[in-house]
Length: 193
Image: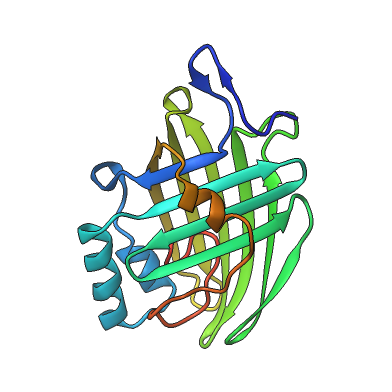
């Protein structure tokens, strides 16, 4: 399996650093409403996202998937064994996440399935990240369902590949809890995308 690679100038793996292209991405407001996030927190998240850079750093190395997410109001690093469900304690119970390569033969697309309790019920998130534009960009699709209310939200985000910094590499080295002023559980694709 190729975890990092360039073929004829095109990137073939999600491994690398990514910055959110705000002009081509959906607003997170409907997504946060479906999460049942307080209105004031939604306003803060949307303002921070519009005024500051959102950055993701991804590493796929063998059977290990690591992602570091950084925004103005949040920073966290999560590590997952591909194909193995991971249970993570959250405020309202246990969040369960599994990360899988869409095609086991390459690292150009992943699928993340998460279930997580919230104070008012349970959420189910199906996320997909796929290389587009010859690997110079990544399409993130977030399909969120509030199990209790039946409310659904579909969000698309475009991430543009940028050079990986020393800080990016250092942030991938160890798992870290969210450093946030935002309330609620964190999952791949939630408040910090």
